[in-house]
Length: 375
Ligand SMILES: Cc1cc2nc3c(=O)[nH]c(=O)nc-3n(C[C@H](O)[C@H](O)[C@H](O)COP(=O)(O)OP(=O)(O)OC[C@H]3O[C@@H](n4cnc5c(N)ncnc54)[C@H](O)[C@@H]3O)c2cc1C
Image 1: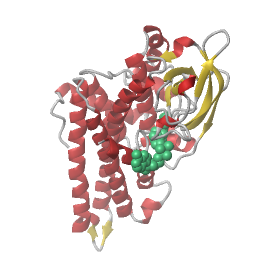
Image 2: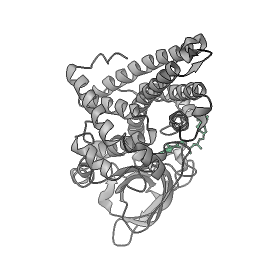
Image 3: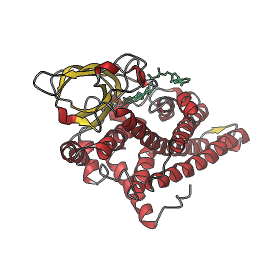
C-alpha cells in the first residue's frame, strides 16, 4: 500500500516508530487483555510516555493522529484500538473542543499524560441510534450542582475510566420522549463519585475494550462539570459524531490491513490439492478484490484525514469513510475465516477474533443502516 499524498519522510518515520511502540507495549499482552476483558492499567502511561496519547485532534498535527489510528488498527486487536481511540480521541475531543481552561487542566491534561482514563457514556437501553429517547436525567441538587440518575450501556474503558463524558437531560420540561436532544448536556462525571456503579458486559467482539454498564444513582455533579453549553449538547454531539466516525473509519482501515496480511500469509502457506490456496484462481481473485477495495478505502481515509486537518471535513465524508471501512472489515474477516477452514472456527484463532470484532464495527459509532440514511 503506497503512502498518503501528504505523507512526508517525517510521517513515514513516525509511522515506523508508532508501529515499533505498539509492537512493544500492546502486542505481547493483547491476547491476555482479550481474556481479562481490559488492558493492563500500565498501558496508558506507557503510551503517554511515547507521546501517543497527546497527538493533535486538529490542524496539521492530526495527520500524526491519522497514522496512529491506522497503526492501532493494524495491531489486529479491535478491543484495544477501541479503548485507546475512545480515550485519546472520541471522549477527550469534547474536552478539547468545548472544555473550559479549568476542565482541560483537570481532565484533558491528565488524560494526555495517561494518569486519568476517559470514557464516553452516551448509549442507553432505549437510546442508541435514536438519541431522542435519552432518559438519563439531572435535577438540581439542594446546595448547588446536579443530581444524575440513569443507566449507560456499552461504555468502552468502563471499569478503568477515571471520568465519563456523559450525555444527560438537564432541562426537565424537555424530558418527554421524542423531543430530540433538546435540553441535553454533556457532563464530566468522576467515576469515583458515590452512586456510580460499573458492571462488565461480555461482548461477542472487542473483548479487551473493557465494556461496561454504568449505573448513575443520585450522582452529584458540580455545576462547573457541564461541558460546553448547558442544555445545548445537540450541536456538540453532531460535531463529536463526525470526529468519532473519522476515528472509527481510520481504525477500521488499519484493521483491514491486518486482516489482509493474515489472509495473504495463510493462502500462501496452506496447501490444497498440491498447491498453495493462492494457486486457485477463486482464492486469488477474492484476495485481489479485497486488496483493491482496501486500497480505495485507505486513500479515502487519508483524504478524510487531510480534510479534517484543514478544518474542512464534512459529515458526509466522515460517514462514507466509517460505513465503507467497517463494512469492508466484515467482508475481509468473512473471507479470511472461510479460507482458514475449520481452523478459523476455533474460538482462540486470530481469524475468529477478527470475524467477531468486525461485526461490532458496523454497529458502534453509528450502525451502517443509519449511516446510509445520513448519506
Ligand atoms: C462494541 C461496542 C462498543 C461501544 N462503545 C460505546 C461507548 O464507548 N460509549 C457509548 O455511549 N456507546 C457505545 N456503543 C454503543 C453504540 O454507539 C450503539 O450500539 C449504536 O449507536 C447503535 O445503537 P443500538 O445498539 O442501541 O442499536 P439500535 O439503535 O437499537 O439499532 C439496532 C439496529 O437497527 C438498525 N437501525 C438503526 N437505525 C436504523 C435506521 N435509521 N434505519 C434502518 N435500520 C436502522 C441497525 O441495524 C442497528 O444495528 C458501543 C457499541 C458496541 C457494539
